[in-house]
Length: 372
RNA sequence: GUGGAUGUAGCUCAGUUGGCUAGAGCAUCAGAUUGUGGCUCUGAGGGCCGUGGGUUCAAGUCCCAUCAUCCACC
Image (cartoon, rainbow, N blue to C red; front, side, top):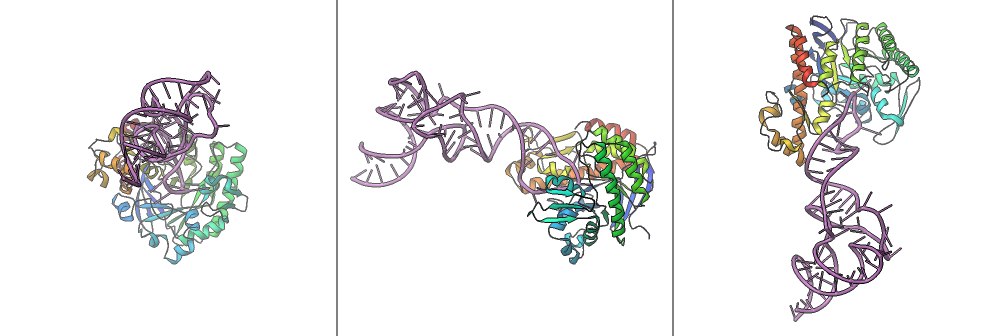
């Protein structure tokens, strides 16, 4: 079968690790590296589809766990699939629920068969097996589905991490067997916690199954950043050069830059929208908490030089006022800005790879974002 | 004018038969947030308890006076 989601590599950095490309999907071609805004419940919180388009997003995330519980994947299927249901004609990737299993903590029980858990909404009991999760994701109908995996906690001992990654590999086989292909691509997920040998083993296991793309999971769960970077150094070389690589759950500007430098093509993260709702925004000079009193009379845009809707039309003082007053427009503007910031940054990274200036771009940008 | 009620943090109020360094919510200030359990979490500052006397080992608490505000009655 011809894969419906493919990566075309356009240009590489001098060391050959970072790449600029195009991700071809049934819902459009997406320049990579790419940041994917998270729209857990069929909505990128506070931001409408036309606003997402305007700020340059080409692909967003949805979440199996949430959409299964509410409103139910069967309804989404009857509505014509998630694209139609939420009126988004760009590409969509659905996360499998593996991470929610991790974050649900004491509400779940993990066995070889799958994961038993209780709904955070009404406490009802449910069972997610790899087969069931494939059924749900096919009904939702995103362009890219993810394998059901176990995201090991951090810290986590070597024995647990080994067993967990091995089970994730067995689950990946079951996912593959249960997934009928069609227009939807299925990505595998590399696990292995913070152990180099397990990362390499997990990558090899996944690659042997021949997925059209690979997620790297289990990182950015509390480990130091240099540990995450060294895990990428171990993992990426084990993955096929012509397939997309997706670092799951990473979205701070410094980590995006370091991820791309190590060969990552795709990222997703709630960080930009979550910190936006709490009054923090990205700027070319680092993060600022625009909710702070220091900006009460600051009549400049959030980030001078930014071309987003918020920066073209409003001042820090006004947006701070909206945030303090609890006006919904405030968190909408900060959300739009932060998403635009990351989308634009990825565009700049891509351009720098293409014109050969990635190393300089990385150095300059790193100075701003190091430990920020 | 008479009778009553109330005065504690910026605001709204707790504060036991007097007994640790007078508390809470909101507000203010600062920080956190990384495959989202949607308005979260953590921390900080801020009070001569209306004022002045008295009783007592000890008073936000009891007594007296006084001021302010509110209510009722003349």
